[in-house]
Length: 193
Image (cartoon, rainbow, N blue to C red; front, side, top):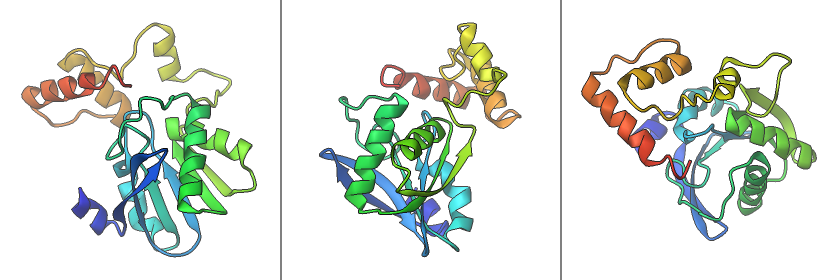
């Protein structure tokens, strides 16, 4: 993992927030851009972006509590407002004054709330498929959830394939043994998520 980040121009670091270890990556120079990942994801989501962004920005991509390398804080709630409050505590711990903010999915919804609550701290806001921002027409995911289908917790290989196609647009070239392993790993964290 550290090699992946080293090649992308950032270094893995940790900081205490609420007395819990939060892992993040940081690198580059210039104005700061803080990157917030989505549900069941982590800072590695941003690796392809950090390679380019470090040429122009001081890039920081954090792991939310219980995600990636960050410790689980069982007191931490995961509604967007609580996550925005966590981001503010991270920002304070890092001593950030004014920065750019980007988020995808759950991180995008969190970024919107954070920006509304702290407009004086956010220079520019970038959103990628933000959770909680409802367009006039429901997304495919919203429709599936309304039908009681949650693709994010597949029960078998067929549902795992459906999840991957939904996320990537095409299947992963993995054998069924690896897919079954992935299903088990995803569902091990189901109670937490």
